[in-house]
Image (tube, rainbow, N blue to C red; front, side):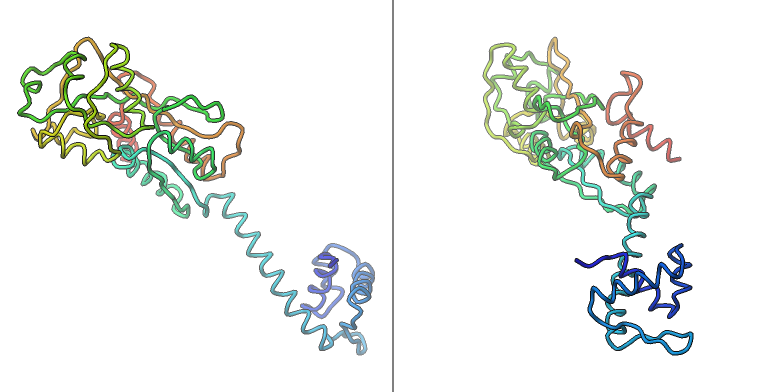
Length: 315
């Protein structure tokens, strides 16, 4: 098997055509270099150097071997620089998972903040239901996720991050919009456009109806919040979405929010990553950024407050 240390001794000697300079670079004595060169030539069964007076020269075999060795040790230098860049967060890849709602309303500002601090890090953002993103952590497709805790998963660490208000949404001409509030029994009678299986929103809504022994009238299910809003605006049914996701439509009067009588429905959003697994430098830096943003007060626990504080810090 090739001895890389002997190859290095040969390379430095051939590069400088001097055993003395090779010894200086390797911090060894000149006799040690001469001895290791002899052993390397014996292993190769080739004569790699010629001597003339006090000077040494490469043989043709030595020149050919030197060109290959030079490529190896140039790659070694590249590798050392790459390691330093990875350790210094000047290079790397960050794989994140999140829900579609957070991908649209929260992640752009957060990723911009991270990218301004670490411009050399490439970011891959994966979107899906909370359950899909939990599985993406387990399967090592993503490192960190911002999701709802859709299931109990012992291998995943969940750190509470924010609380989002879930609101029933109806078209502005709906009778419930005029009343402004509705009981759970009334909502169960309406055709419901439900978020997909595996979403945190769906888990919360199903739990609400189950608590009252009611079965919702599910008309359709989809993961696309924009499609849900369009269908509701046309009067096809009602739905439940995070208030932040419908804030513009509510303000412009294209949708209306209904208060649930005697209930406050909130979606608990968490930072998630695998327990007992070492994060990359980029993953740890992103996790640290998220942890620094966790609200200290309950009234600051929503995505809007978090983003406002984050923007204020940028300024």
